[in-house]
Length: 317
Image (tube, rainbow, N blue to C red; front, top):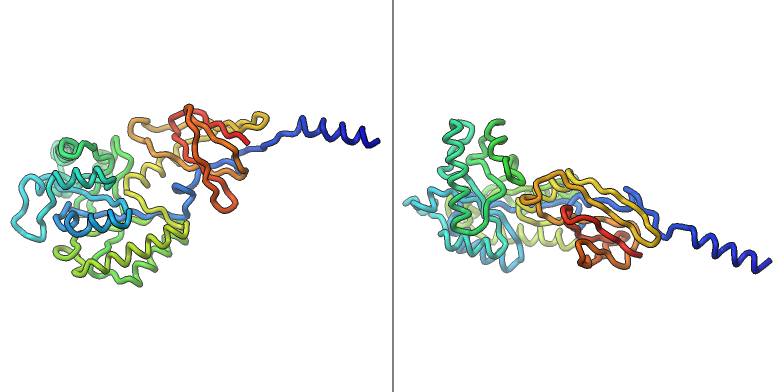
């Protein structure tokens, strides 16, 4: 009798699937690294002190921000000291550090009031200048004065990962208490917060004392370290969201493997952000495109970073 039970156990184990995977046990995280919410710090007009005062602090803290430039100011700096821009060489240095350099229009004109020809020049000329001087083509666009029309949004969104259509100002009138309450609301709702800052010490809506902004950075970093918040450039969060919402997963279980085939319905030359896969089971190894993918343990889940355009992901257990 004991032998029969033993043989039956072996038989059942041989035919039982080791991994049972489905859409619930493998899915794409809402934000990178399975964070609860996202935050992008954006800085308008490419002002000189954004390089001299702000950029060193961002490097010290490891924060990547987004800086939108006005091409005409870069080529012909205004005499007003509050509008002095940083240089193209400095813009390139920031880009090489991983800061996003993007467009705020060549002349900072209200795009909703432009003719089609004027809009093309305003957008394309600034894109060309940024690419020529930094080596990076801007894949986002920030509307001057935050003014826009449906037609302008449609044009400015072409061949981009996103445009800034909403934001909250982060400047002279914002207190530490306001910022903490704002960010907590973003986290609680699982949203993407986008802040907009102009002057740091001087100029439009400036803090006066930059340490006020540094304290806000410290609070945001604390939320990031707690695992709640993803702080990234506007480009990276916009690209992640688009890819997440336009990628489907085909999941197959094969003995001791789960094969996940992502299919993304976007331009692969523009959308190249890795996506986070959340696994409800512990993998031994994950492979994609001939390379092993690191596995990260996140509470009761396991995370891997995949490239949605690189084909099958083979997860072994």
